[in-house]
Length: 178
Image (tube, rainbow, N blue to C red):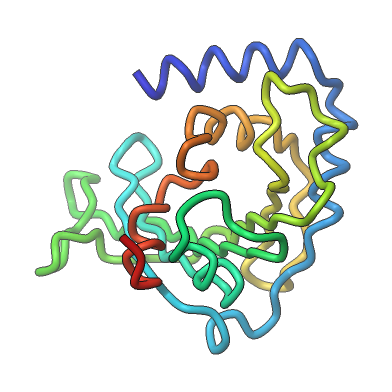
């Protein structure tokens, strides 16, 4: 169901937005230096689909504190996701640790969602994700990855009730909310 919504959202978004505009929003997001020390690591999740990844997700204090009250999160909220390739066994299947999570291999990317008042107003309602912007950074020099970010919006679009976050439940729990 989610994949069907993602495909539909992607098709709608691509029809409504030229590629150049999809790249522009990522330029608003800065790499959050020092996030591993200053943000809260609130969940780790497997991505068992064809990507075979494990992700570690962090939130800044603004996101964490405002999650206590439920969605939406306050302006200034930043979510960081470290995307790791899963270590694979001889059969090319992810190696699983005792906690049931994939064993992280190489760090593939660092993705960031950031919400600021007024962000996203230039996007059509068909794929706007509140006031969130998306960006991906390289693991080495933390440079912005030049790509079309519209698929990020399309994938998160069905999650409006959880402020467009796949991990809102874990964030709310880490914040001590309901």
